[in-house]
Length: 114
Length: 112
Image 1 (cartoon, rainbow over the protein chains, first blue to last red):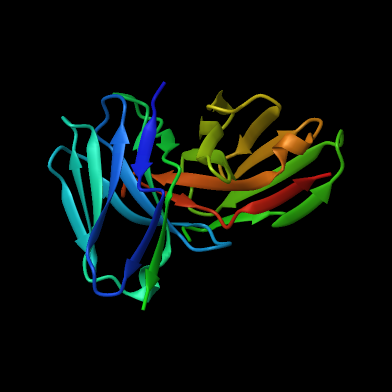
Image 2 (image 1 turned 180 degrees about the horizontal axis):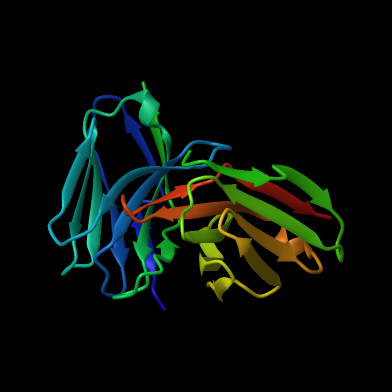
């Protein structure tokens, strides 16, 4: 059974600071997704990482994937209040297949304080 | 929003009644999914479809059935709703070109 663990589950940070959210998963996969969810809303796709060493950046967020360590990170640079949301990582459990079935972590609730 | 709509958006029903949720997409995507979201669990896959009439179970399929008679519609049915099925249900599609999964707006279901 594929397990996806995010930590921390809760993160309170000050504006202007940097922090990293970690996503560990238990079995081989080379497709990893990051999503953002605002309260009461749907999930917004942030990044899709499709190979070992993949790095993607958008604004103050940067995601990376290390398939050998089974680890992805979401790094937040100089946080601003608008980044407050819940962030999910998800791993494609269908190794070698093509059904794109995702297993999600429990999410990290990020609160950025002024 | 990748052209995904869900209906109804909110529903309150009683234990033991049948419920059908509809997911509709306008962009001819082959792969469609139903997930449920509960506090402390993230999202969990219920069922998915890889084509018309082609469906399979996900992680939490007990008590749910699905049907896909047309490319654009993926239906999730609770044959006899239970309180444990109170949840927010999200439909998703997989864009093979972009390799992204896009989610619909969600349906909040309450079973009393």
